[in-house]
Length: 363
Image (cartoon, rainbow, N blue to C red):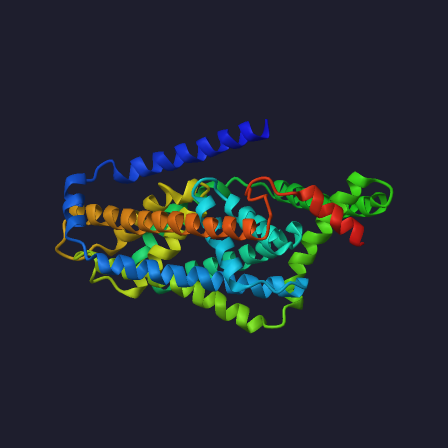
């Protein structure tokens, strides 16, 4: 039943992504886009892919900083392999890549899975903060260009929906949130009390304990400034990837770094949308961002064609590259497992029960 619901969820988000893709490209001239692609400067696409690969390596090194306080020293190669496999899986099943890369390190390094998921949770929180900062910086720096986007998609809908909000409703929502927090605290205390007498409750308690231990690594981490530096370099790499692809086409080659930052900020919102690999949602967002940077003297339709081509080249080059890199990484993972006589090379069936039982035995 869970697998069936997962398939339905995947098909739902895929259909939404396909719908957004159709909306973005329905009025574009595909034949002219093909002509532009034939005359593109491909070297910049390969440079952008190389920058992206370095950013993914930095992500693996940053992850190792969170894992080290757990008492494990992971080779950079293994964490890099796990990160690449995670990206590959994300193109098939949205958000499953985060779990799969934890499974990979669980298989190779025998690190408890729940603790690894806790470290990834911290990563996601920090990346969300970075993305929010980028969005804020972009809208401040490019306010004159993007003010229509703010007015039409943020300011006006907020006024429309907030006009009829009752103060009683706000109080009720606040009370519900407080009640949920109190209930969560009581449930955790109940689980702790029952875990000594119940194997099932013990597993739940150990799972939560391990997850919390993973989260705590942000406090116990020795090199916090190195973690911040890696984060800055990772997102700078993403920015450069976005900007460098501009030089592949004559019409976008004159755009500046701030245009790249705007495409990164708005395009990332498309990636966050849970369509598989950002298909459709990224294209829609990137074309929307570029619509504010049409050069003088360029017709609307020519600019839309170029924006659509840019979105396709940027997204699809990364997609095929990461799928290929992930497949190669998975091959190395399988070879390594067989070399050490481990038969289990699955990604989607982590031995949670076994890992949790080990934690219970240890405590």
